[in-house]
Image (tube, rainbow, N blue to C red; front, side):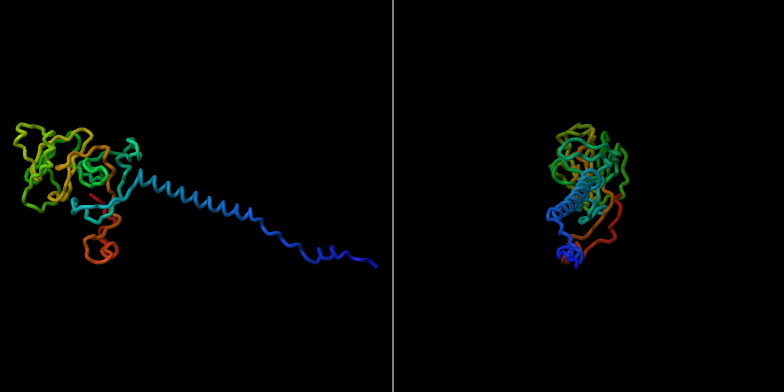
Length: 254
């Protein structure tokens, strides 16, 4: 009578158990997943910073100096590539697609507050001669038609801050008698690589009349459109949710 080896019988009747994956394998899989996630996040962050630095950046209108073209509470997307974005930490600028033109609305850092961003309208280009008489702006001797300009205060006002203009008068015949005011000043000649800017709300704007020319390298870009807007002066709670100016969202800036 044949005998059967018990160990052989067990191996035929019961399949061998599949060994559990080693701990090292699970850790390696988790490590690959973590690395892929970090790499994707890093790429997205680099792209975001690149676009923000060299192409488009968001700004908020801080004051009423550009009413009614721009309102307090308007959030703007600004094209930084059009005038050549600056490489951070260096004086190097990327190639520009164009230069500011008369009538352009620009974002820039003013000479007296280089850490802040201002938004105004370019009215004077390098080499232009400018003056204002009774609120009317003259460029190279020609009165300008400015449908965007807003005037609300009939009383003129002098300011000691405007005395910087003495060094840029075209015909300084009698410097001692020159008393520039908000509505009457000049004629001034714009230096090379400089711009003269004014707020559209002419009677309530601190602009080149008071603190001088804008350097070419201080220009950051040109606003494209309003991507969000709300009334920050509203008395309701959470005005950024309840006082949205829907009619302004998506509007272009002329």
